[in-house]
Each structure stands twice: as structure tokens, then as C-alpha cells.
Amino acid sequence: NAGVMQNPRHLVRRRGQEARLRCSPMKGHSHVYWYRQLPEEGLKFMVYLQKENIIDESGMPKERFSAEFPKEGPSILRIQQVVRGDSAAYFCASSPMRSSSGANVLTFGAGSRLTVL
Amino acid sequence: AQSVTQPDIHITVSEGASLELRCNYSYGATPYLFWYVQSPGQGLQLLLKYFSGDTLVQGIKGFEAEFKRSQSSFNLRKPSVHWSDAAEYFCAVVSNTGKLIFGQGTTLQVKP
Image: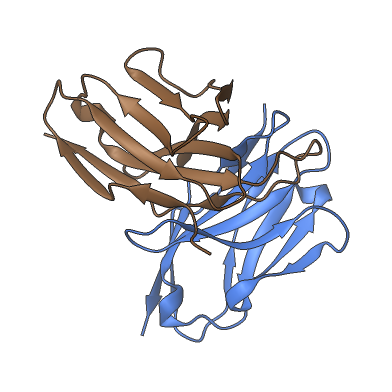
């Protein structure tokens, strides 16, 4: 039973290029969350998606960042025209459902570490 | 707004010594609280969680945490630390919109 799979684990981009980070949730999980961890900081929520729907993108930067979770395939976090400040670890987490009470346990992937030169 | 504070950024303890990592939360209702551990270059592993019931919760790797509503705290403890416990520890609370909100993290170093 594979856990949350993220790839690539490490990605190097030059300023202005695009970065695509992929996340395959655990089997049976239909809810995906993306978090960003900047150096020396904690994890910050970016976006919450269900299949084909963005539920909460309150943590996403207004420009250059987008996320999707298609009916088939992994969730994708896309960063266009990357800048040095985008260098961070990006973590994906999944859960089987969203509990209306909030008692939801997320399983995290190992992260994708983006370095922008 | 909900928030989590981990007052200690770095803690160093000797192997075999006891450990307590502090976590304070801000949340109006009964919180759902978590402790995660992150080893260098790795993802986050769930240590334990509190949803309701017994305020002393047991987790993996010999860790426990106690929910104290009066102090808005959820401190993580371990009676005897092992060198393999060196890692970064994150406390988190579920927000009223269902998101996990993390503290800044506490880096634990273990001296031989």
C-alpha cells in the first residue's frame, strides 16, 4: 500500500522557467492538500483539492501558481516563471475524506524540493 | 484566527534524558491537535493526535502528549530520548475551515 507519492523529489530550475510538481495520493484518498515549507519556517497551507475541484486556495499566491487534481492522474502544482523566492520544499498530503467535524488525519508525502538558480 | 506557537526553536538534550516540547494553540472550540516529526530531507510522519476523550494521548516511538484546555497547550513528551529522535517536530491544529495549521517547528538535537 504505497503512501503519498511525490515527484520529482528534487527539481532545479532557472529563473523564468516553469516548475511542475506531481502528487499521487494514497489509494482510496480523494482529497489532496499542498503545503510549502520555506527554509527555517514551518509548513504553510497553499491549496486543498478534491477530484476536479479546488475547494480552498486561500494560501496560493495570486500570480504564477496554480493547482489541479484531474479525474485521472496525479495532482499537479504548477509554478510559472519561477523566482528565487520560490525555492522551498513543497509537500502534498492526502486524506480519504473531509470530516465535517475536522477530525481528519492527513498523510504526507516526502516532498519535492525546488531550487531556483 | 487559529494559530499554533512552538516557543522553542531549538532544543538540545542528552541521550537518555527526558524531553518536553511545548505547543500552545489558539482556537475557540475544542481543537483537533497533532504532532508530526520530520527527519532531515524527509516528509512528515504523524506521531499522535488528539480529537477528544482522554487528554493524555499515546503515540508512536514512545511519545505522548497532554491536552490542557486551561493552558491552551498540547506539549509533547518522551521519558528517555534516543539519538534517532533528532529531527524537527511540528505541532498542528485543524482550523475552522478544515486546514491544518502548523507551528514553526522545534529542532531537536540529541547529545551522545
